[in-house]
Length: 359
Image (cartoon, rainbow, N blue to C red):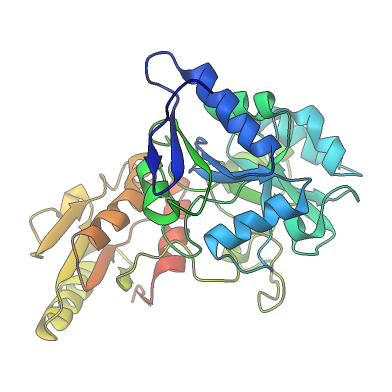
């Protein structure tokens, strides 16, 4: 390539939006992927760390860079619905209906896998997780590379997921070949995961496509662990990412205070007082309606309680900002786990060292 891309600890930063260089950035990223390398790229949810899903050694590079447990399966990103049949078999008509409705979009479907999919991608499971992302740069990369891309979030395993190229470099600079910078991710939390390996199908991770949206299109009920009508053994290989291990967590311990109204406020204030009395520097994450009520050395406003979309888009960036501020503990005000708010609360519960529940 004749273009000189900036290097960050040896990782190329491919700035697709600068000076009309998108085509060259995409070609450089595609060549790295075709050679068995790893490229972080933006999706509408978070940045993914991509590698050729059909090349076991390339996929092993993802696990090494992220320090990800080998029993945590990966999601494979496709350029179009038609590619799903190359990786999955016996695809139920209901899955096709959902894919036609929500793809490209933040919905991952778990389906019976074909033999062409390496076991390292699926953690040895008989299923494969696939989706078509709704981000123009991600789709262009998939088409330019001509490969299905295994792509978990482009962060160190367990850390808050990256929603900007800068977040990726904070965790992975020097460990991967390149980052394709496409600006901030608009949704900000990972895709919804729905498994057709269960009957009825089971919602394994909430995300941008809500349970209500899925049931409306299917015209049928879906199982969900959060609803108490579906259980699985997470001590074994989990059926989807984000189910077995602590995820999305900042370096500082995170305390989540759930509930609503005065009772939640009292618990939040009591916790902050207790942690401060121990000599800890507190970072407090609240909603706009609570701004100014609770004192803290470091205060971040996530969004209005009535705006879960902004809360989702800002969540991981705010957690990373807290770590950058050097706080000893992070206290987060919870809110209603409905719609996209359910995805936000799911991530916070996974990140928390303690959840102080409603009375």
